[in-house]
Amino acid sequence: MRLVTWNVNSLRARVGRIENWIRVHEPDVLCIQETKCSDQIWPFGVFQELGYESAHYGFGQWNGVAIISKVGLDSVEYGFPEPKDEITKEARLIRALCGGIDVWCVYVPNGRIVGSEYYEAKLVWLEELKCLLETRVDPKSHVLICGDFNIAPLDTDVFDIQQFEGLTHVTQRERSKLQELLDLGLVDVALAKAEDSPAFTWWDYRGGSFHKNFGMRIDLMLVSKSLLEKSENIYVDRDARKKGTDTATPPSDHAPLVLEVSL
Image (cartoon, rainbow, N blue to C red; front, side, top):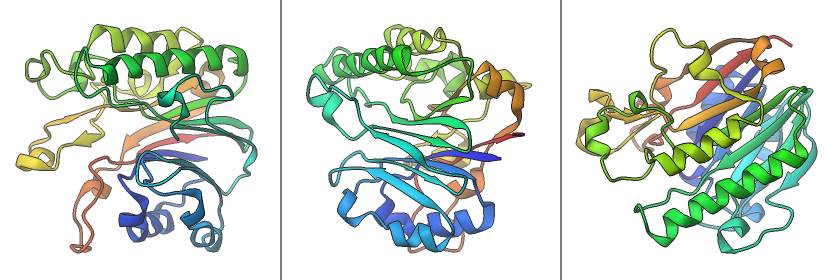
């Protein structure tokens, strides 16, 4: 089974690229973040023609998450059950049962500037996610929490940690919140499976960052130990980040993260 997470940075702008990628790679479950579209314009028909069910949670031009599956899409849940503030009301979380795996697709807030209200809201969002997972997830079952976490877990998960001094994504408070999720019985599967430092998943559009490999690893897959035991291979599809032959449609600044499991 092939499980994928991908921040597409606007599905509307890149639906053709995503459709082509699905045809070539045939994922069993594809979790998408930053769709930037509403449920009303989500292309259910496009994915149905490809043989997939899909569930989407989005309100418009910001955020938006989706799960696309050809192995079942049951017990779908949208967002936090009891959102407490504006940040937890945003379309950043969707959950479904797919082929025996409890799949959670998350799009963690960026945080913008350390110490700002957006940074504090990011920490609140992560705390709410932890509290929800504590009550809703059975760590003994097959669980996948994946998406754009907007956190680089280790200094080696950015191209030059000195360049990130005082910036979001690498602060101890953010990393501590991520560790609290792992402490629920989850494992960062890329880190567990990598022989060296895991590959980056995001590169800035500017300054030739992709070609210089000036990136970050902020797209993560956290799995239960039972699913880790079934995990065979994990990799970043860098080719999807390249311009390729479709010069009219630029790629997302993120690349798909692919996990292959034997179930």
